[in-house]
Length: 366
Image (cartoon, rainbow, N blue to C red):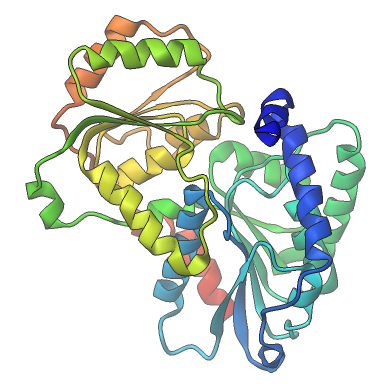
């Protein structure tokens, strides 16, 4: 109760910093679960895999593993090892050797908004400048306020020491431009959010009767731009004619990497049972795309949703973007929802859009 009150009273970034500092202190006393014999094996490490309560990040972890296995095939000498995000960096360093390929989990953690880059990624990049390293698709989340300028200078220096041994994958055009501007010595490529490389559709889904008219997957804080007042007006208007299910940050419990696919399938099945999804979450939109369900998506605070739509989904039928900063006409919105009922969403062109990432990963194991 008290935690919730404090969290709601603080800016999202301040709360995130507190949480990161708490995690950092806890990790100082955590014992390693990594097998020390891994030091002697040739491997691909995926560092920062979700072991907390964000299903979008668990989908990233699942998609990274699946994509990597598809790209490198089964005949490689490299063993794939996933490192959960709560693993202390000192334990990770104990198993890395000079031949290892080091991959960092994608999302929005490459920047100064969260401490993950500072606490985990940066020490590893600094210690292993000659290892091949790659960030899975990321959004640029640096800012230029306060101590961030000093931190950014350190990051640029550490990244520069790795040169083209460090590849940063931007997940939309705005981030690509900024990464190229600030990290001149590194290899910058572009690919969609890695979750778009999944395909959760099958023929059985098309024949099943939908049990929900509208599924709303909404934030209750943090990156939210759509006002709660407008959101409630939308819900009330839709409930006049439709069955509406609303979830606000509905996975409040930690999920282990071992259970992530089970939890993801629960959410994906729920989406497949709806006729239209309305969301202000990036991965709410992406889950709809990979499931083939029409979606209306509102922008978030840093426009990563807008940029994803403009870069990768601008010509995709029935995935519709709405800027939350503009006034929303409720009557027009309900008509828009009505027009999406029963529509389909074309499958994403995975092979073409992910070829730069696939080719880069293949080059690491030649």
